[in-house]
Image (cartoon, rainbow, N blue to C red; front, side):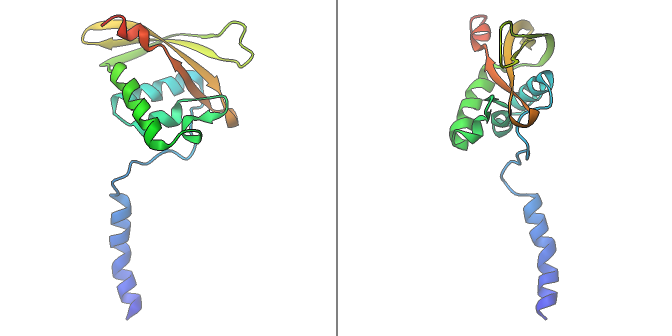
Length: 146
């Protein structure tokens, strides 16, 4: 009798797990390469996936989620996403930061918003496990053009 109840309960539990209200975050923060992490960061910003953005934003020690509480990190990503609002983007240049012992990569992104294209500098850094993180975004490049 209990086996039947359990058998009837399993599909309902699976459905609840699949439809859970919490966003899912990747098991491995960061990206595989500098350009890839910037692309994923901007796509997450456009989709308002602030938790995903926080997984991709960090330093050589890893994602900011390893340092900051998730609600605080997501609030910061919300602010960044608001400034980086765009219809499309294209990666332009990807160059090593001169004199950087950390192997930082400077990436210029052409961000298009309301018909205007603005070059926005990003800095990426390698972190744990060979993963890359967005460390800096020059938000002033955007706000000074508004």
